[in-house]
Image (cartoon, rainbow, N blue to C red; front, side, top):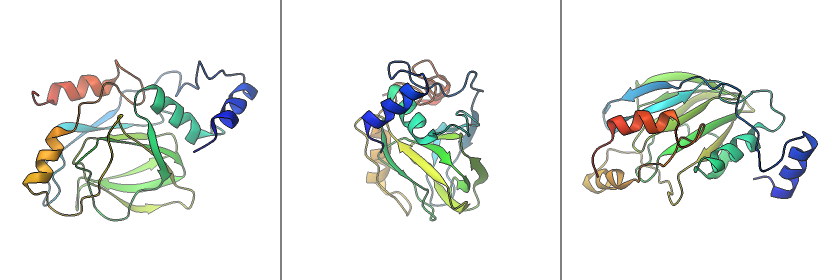
Length: 199
């Protein structure tokens, strides 16, 4: 990740203060909702839909990765890595995950083999509830992804059908307090609360 001092210097050079971070866009469109039922061995999350934000950030931002990290952190989803998406089908049983696409393009499939195929571009953001299958099919050489999670959540990698212990872990994943793109009153809170199981 970028050094905080260097990041603040870049902000100052652009006439933006750290107290008022870079906005995603002036008007973020509502996310596309992708409900995913169990598919073969992939559990997905039948209660919580995937949220796909198209062009949530300006693709031509000079430091899009840092802008995403700043926004995710401000909204309670601290980033944990910069990398890509694995080229094998997998899911996480211990964490909800936000993928911020900070460079290039990628062709992904969500929901396991034969699932929902989509192409994402720099500026897009996907929010995956625990259990959601995902896999990279193809990508540009400059494909860059920011991975972020609610506080205290660490991700595992599951590549086979969940057993009883894995399903129990998924049920224990805490409900996030805010939307990683728009904050505490954002679409995630609205759409996930409607499908949330009682605690």
